[in-house]
Length: 241
Length: 325
Image (cartoon, rainbow over all chains, first blue to last red; front, side, top):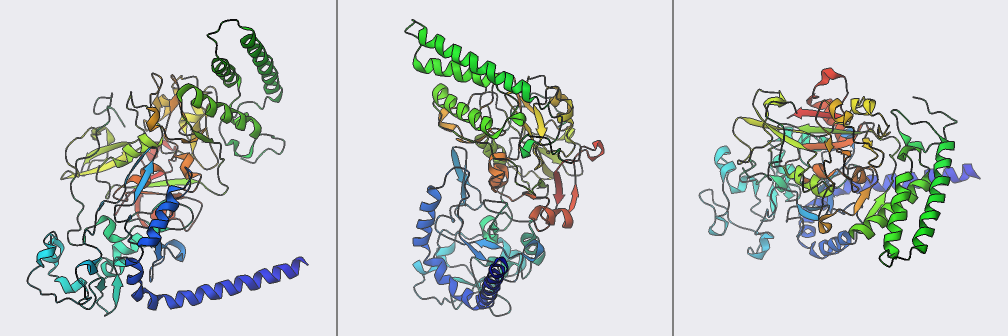
């Protein structure tokens, strides 16, 4: 009896594994389409926010994530990157006791997202000479330092996609694929756990913030800031930690 | 240390100087407590003074029962549940706080470890701010578990670090190094405690039974990392700012004359969540995880990064590593 049950369980596991493997193989194609998923998320994002609001203290927040391709975490485990949604643009706010504040450096990262709110067609003409009038808020420090132009990273065929060197396209959520073309070491460390930031829990799903949650792609260095107030210390300087 | 099969204490009793099992003593205390409680109740009921309200009487009884209770490690599950119910009720009646207190034990197969990236920390102090709010730290005395030291490049002596900087950060030619309780594997603070009020849990967190601490501060003298804080006065937290998500061994209300310290946010980390400092860090300088899981982020950092520990020569084996990019 027990043996028969074990056998059934084994068959179920095998079927589940095969199904998972099939999904794994299908993913690269579906990624190209997921830009639609990124922009049409607002409904599910609202549902997610409602779900988070119902949580008991101590329970995990529910973060929306997309499985990362081509990179795996420690031990070859797959992991996820936080999907850009309306409320996650506001810097992944988290609750500490009675206060809530954003935990990502770029609290309002992409102010003009989605691109289709102005660009009604998906194609744009990108010149190498200047940044369009509507995008004067962009400080092109990174392009100036590297000699890059708009079309080095942005797709001219679809404004909401990123153009990779090998001719493929990536969504904004998949910015790690674009950045990894040069900063492969950093992205490798990010996949391992020594760079970037994990959201919510050390256990369970591993969802990391994407590159653009902390770094402005056009000006990637972390900016100076006035810190939170200093502690009141009784000890004189030079008296041990 | 092999577990003693005759030991009836709960499984998460942890290591350290365990007080005697004292089943008889506990039973005796229980009987006394029961008798006294009945007496107090009877007294309260008989008191002709109209000023003694029902709530006053209840508080007196609860406070007495709290006073006579045992060390957290020697309590049975029922006794733990009872003390938590009393503490929750006292918080409600005395301070008007609606708190949820847990007694969650350590997860099996988990030992917590922490890594701090001194290349990434920019000294913003978000971690300190989150910690104060999460752990109900005394606002009046401005107690803080975490210190962020601004250090000149090339210097590693924390004595030369400045934890009181107020200028824009990161400052040119400086790096930032955070300290807090390092949850040592061989904690000197536990060894010196004369009453067994502090001990190491199986997941590596050194905790304090705030109701068993006598406030002698030996542990503070023994800690080479300046990680423990003493409550010189009763901690004050505005009722609206109290974090209701509490754990008996972590962020519940402390009282005057007891020592407290960082517990890696036990009330969060035992639920699978990240400590508040890790979650609040805006630069991702803090890595937290299970040291026993070979596929955890913390293990990846320890295996792939250049790491060091503070005052490693003291052999306290802190479970807190510093690393660089």
